[in-house]
Length: 168
Image (cartoon, rainbow, N blue to C red; front, side, top):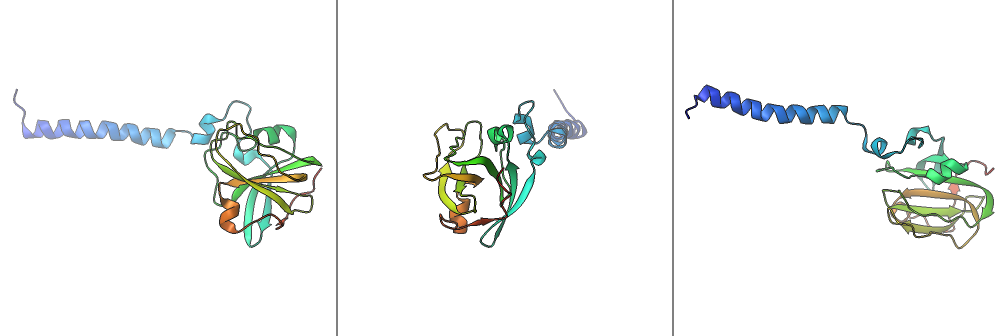
């Protein structure tokens, strides 16, 4: 079989252009990864109320989970957090509140706090595990951040988180 140079160039152009067009379509029409994995009825990340907290000189943009359904979902199904983004859990009672990482796709650090914002315990949690992470002390708040966030910022038990909304 014999091909002219023009025919070969045309075939090459089609062979390259079709896959590129398909990739372009997927890139511009695909939903964000975290949205694809959210089950029906799950709250979208932007739908949680927000609070600006401070830990030393660091400003934290925290989604707030202050009711049972929001606390149950927490950061489940999320695939990423912004550098100083986290989730603040607000509880109705001063008690030991335990956490696990079922359906949580990213590793997290958690700080447990008293009503006055004093950090009592910090723990590291691996993604998609069901191990219990419980503080040694009672508290009314827990703040989840990206893995190693507290360590990298020098935040330790005994320090305070400011800007916490009132516990209910």
